[in-house]
Length: 123
Image: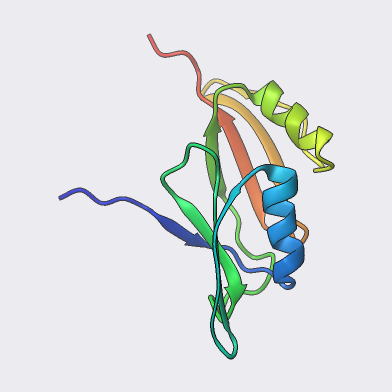
């Protein structure tokens, strides 16, 4: 049986600020933004090339804003990804070299933490 992760909730305090951050600064695509009912707004954003999206909004999750950690995306070039984040005003870590890849870390305005990983060459 195949199982695919398709949607991850990211808790945010200010939906407009978070949407602008992910779309304008990180480069996600804004797929959907629906006010479903009073207190329920569904905003789906997808990283370029990803089959998995994130959802932010109102009434989406009980997690506290900024409590999502450990979301990791794979990139082709950690240096280029870091440069793009910095050019768009996102604070990003230096590239961390590990035997299992090269990593760049950043946080959204609420403190949700992300990792970008450039996979090592495979033999």
